[in-house]
Length: 373
Figure 1: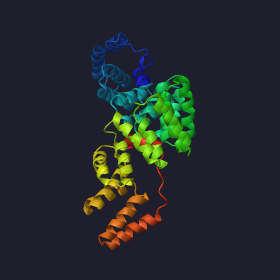
Figure 2: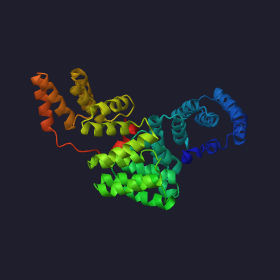
Figure 3: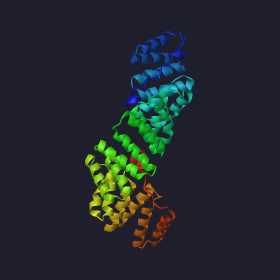
Figure 4: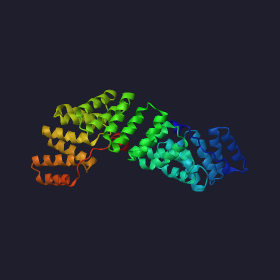
């Protein structure tokens, strides 16, 4: 992302102040000239003579990182910290080297340490927030992204990531506040309208959510997820004909949109057209991020065809994905009863009766689902 790409490595020259060793001074001079490969060789020579020199290991990490040898750089930084834990900037450099390798989980530890030592370091705050965001730890991401946005309020991309983190951690008021700020920076932003729609949906304002998505559709009809989002909101309101139109428009933009396939198929099921639903469901279920409803509806189709074992497998898959939803338990119970498997039917009916009334998921949950899986 643009606000990450400009991050530079911290130099550790201060840690070497006063060093008189000729090889060390030579390595520092090469580093200051940006001759990174030669600097790497020079720092390795220093380390060969003084293996316990933590600062030299840290400088070696800097040289390797500039050569984009991030795995080796990370090893050098770890060695530096093991030898001299209080070296300035090394946790941040280690976190960045891990971030560059997409090892976001591993990067969180050193970046937390960097933020703890220097809370005003926005480089560390942004990186830590992005690591939490990239590992779907949205609630943890919010304070770090807020701190970064406070220092760079005109950064649209960073503010959008913050808004999404607020949404996906159910901080809807925070998301709406970011929406207002995004509109100042990008008045015609379809993404901003979508964010606001998701937040209003989470705040149980379906009419407001639908209006925001209608505005997003008008502003950018080819925006990814815009028709699905509007369709899903209409589907939750049981406006199936209008929802069907939106799901088909999303599929016109992206024929492999997993959730649009699944929810369009669900409408076909509700209209008693299982034959039209089946190919949509089979395509959706075979793709990453397939929603639970695809397996519930496949179970319905298979049961109607008399393919009982296939139906059982589909219902059980849906239950595995979310055991607290009523519909799959109830349908599986009915199927078991029709097969004469009364004990299993009784168990599933009991589970269904113990569960609360099924609730439709917020749109933010649906749009975040592929990322969180």
